[in-house]
Amino acid sequence: MTKKKAASDKTTAELEGADKTGPDVSIMDACIAHAKEVKTTQLELIKSKGYDFAPEFRDMTIQLYLFGVMWKFAENLGSADDARELAFAALAEFFVQERMPQQKVAKRIEFLRKMSKIEEDHNALAVAIGYESEPGDNSLAEVFDHYVDDTQVSGAFWRLYDRGRKIMLYGGLAIAFLVIWFVTLFMPGNTTIAILASGLIAAAIFVIPVFLIGIFIYRTKIKKAKQAS
Image 1 (cartoon, rainbow, N blue to C red):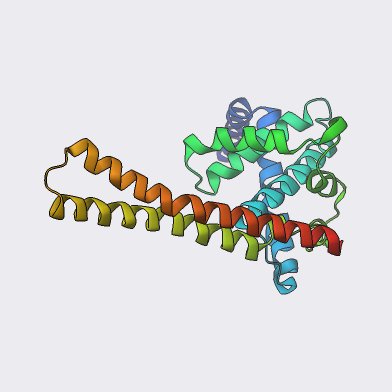
Image 2 (cartoon, rainbow, N blue to C red):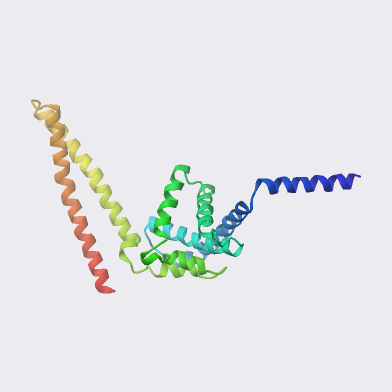
């Protein structure tokens, strides 16, 4: 009698669990678990490569690659008709589980939707290679190897951009503060609007040349990279 009751309780619990989770949810959970395993394995394989890419490019490439991995995995589980959309849903849940703020998840997915396609409706390289990848291969390294010589996504170029951005921001604020302080202290007859305007003009005089120098350096590096290729 006790054995029958235990078996009955187990069956009931299984049925209740089946009611709460439909087939799509089960496939999505499986996709997420598979993506986590692939990510861990692939990041370990590329650790020794010493890639130096801009953080935003690196993150985007990995995310598109994982989307391709989940897309193919969902198809293999028998969800061929809506596998692409299911993979995006799984990727969104993946971000939530990795503690990405909820308000950023929708924007990130929308961005990745746009980046997952290139001209003529072809899949992006990272998506295509992720889709064709096999367990334990070096497919993520294959994606990154295509961009090693691309100056626009290099870590050094990103650091130069980030440094220039900070110089413009903090330098402009410092110049504006100094001019406002000087005018207020030594030219007390000016109105508040005139004082603020002088600070803004001084900041612009500093920021514009720095910006133009940055553009010049950018174009020079891109030109050299094209000539080298």
